[in-house]
Image (cartoon, rainbow, N blue to C red; front, side, top):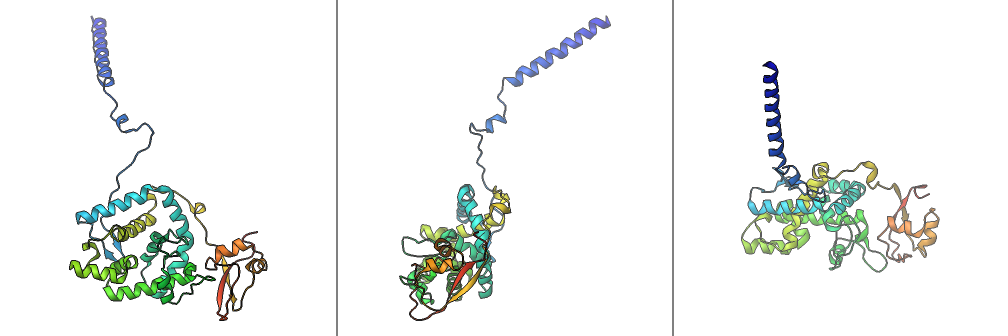
Length: 305
């Protein structure tokens, strides 16, 4: 009897297990439903509870503000190749920009303005703005930069950063806050002033603006957030992947230079290497009829050997 009883219990257990197996195997695996064919997932991004520019809070509780910063966080997070390049260049060039901003009393956050203006490259815009800070010819000359067929100091990072600082300080004095000062760097002081007056508001975040200026502060704040927190946004790299600062020293030049090819050879460089470090030189010679003092950046010996 015990034997028969044990067999009955065993059969019962087997039937239950068989039922469970077929019941669950007839349904698709719920985890598999979330695995795409190419194995690549795209995730929404949680917007931080607090964001600011130069200590001035972004009002992300307002629906349109929240959606606009969401856009820039998404665009800059998922444009991965560009994002990695920005990390690499920032590692090299922020060390030049940061002390100049500090010396003029301009908040450190403005280095991200240069980042969105040019991607930290000496590029030229369709409107003719040049350099890391995208300075227009008229503005550059107004603030003392030399711009001619021989020299364009808008492509001198140190001098251009000083001009940007002076412009921003003047804008801050006009508007009373750094957010509007940053917006005016894109749209001009007169442009921002006119819109504030016509729309009867006092905040950048209350203005109805065109596409470029309307995205401007949001792009800056988004890149600040991403560059500050790379792993949070999925960017993985180590020190070896970043572009290192190249050690240089300055050489004073107060006369004409007839041939920069031969000039470079004196420092064991070629012309290309000299130009990489002095992109403000437009020709392979320097007239210097006024005997102005220029400072050329020369890589330390052995760097290119």
